[in-house]
Image (tube, rainbow over all chains, first blue to last red; front, side, top):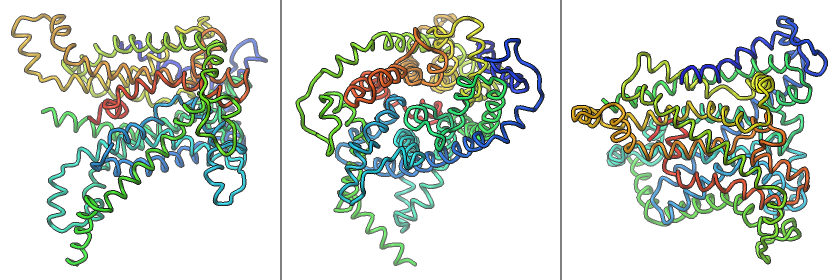
Length: 278
Length: 285
């Protein structure tokens, strides 16, 4: 099993590192890769399109993670109360996460954001806003909206699980001692939610960093081109294997930095689970 | 100080039962409906005639029709659907078959350095697939398995394996050690222990794991886009081909999207209770 995992997952990475040090264009050089050292890295870091894609990736990921985390937290707090039809409301709120991401991208592109018959323009029309071509005028905002719609349920579910694991007797004791709802939230719920928030943010960041469907299908312009999409373009349209590999290595290093935080969070949770078992 | 502390408390009581509580419930429902609306709109538009789907203001009442679904099927939906089912189901079966023994070795009879193994598995899940696509493409090319479902099966298995091992392990460690010990004392051999004691106890966990892996495989777009071209294309690519041949006709696209999405929405709602556990790699119960 381990060997299968090792071969399937790590070998491609090592080969990528090797290719990133070579000059190899599938259309022009038939004799295979030529070793060029770090030339590809020098080249991509002086390439404005690459730097823009890197910047777009950061804006898109941070934007979508922040918005879906805040919305998810708000919804988790609301759904954590007892009320009529709670199960149904919860189901309605989870659904966006289950819709095929490719369908999500097309759904927002064609029906929500459309300048002529889009729902958003229709909702905003009483405010006197003229028809807005959302994807054309505000592509980044649009993509972040799509991603937030898709990922809010993810954060809601994880934070809701955190809220439900909070010990009600502690909250009760605090309110007997005279702590108001805001104080209880600030001093009890927030620290309790911390590991859940960390886990959600780290996993969410790793997933959203890899966004491809929403960019490729809804807004494939330079203003929203992120690293996965840029890499895809370079590798499969330009067939510049050497350069695309160098970019892949850069993407990997960035992800590894984030992932190392993720591993620390996961390590804490693993110890917690073990502690409960004994 | 005391006075300010007491006042919010009395307000909290009101909020829980009185007008404030009703307002919060109403707000929750409004937000739930807003969040659900785009999906609802997709379902509704799938039953519209094309002219009714692209009006401004939008139409909520219309003569429903199944024409758009018929068009989606006529446009060769089934081969894509079968490809998706094959790739997802085959990879899920492989994942469970590989992950169960691995999880066993990490939970019931922990091997040496099991913690390191767990983290090694997790790191592979954190690797962005775009970072490895070039060698994967070149390897698949030289093996002659580009545009073959088997390629997707292998890659989806690798993609879901870490998740499955973490998740199944979290179910396995919940089995009380005493139960396993007792079966051993009763003379059950390893195989009997596995099939008669452990398997029935983790069956719901395995089902939840399988559903989650199914969702991830079904939704996967990047690998399918990069490694298939004609024969092995999956449902997400059906939508892409649908736009390029039919153009952006919203009613037809809605019907097609609904067909493409339905299996996952159903799987997700069935596995709703286990969704959090799966998403957090078994860390949150």
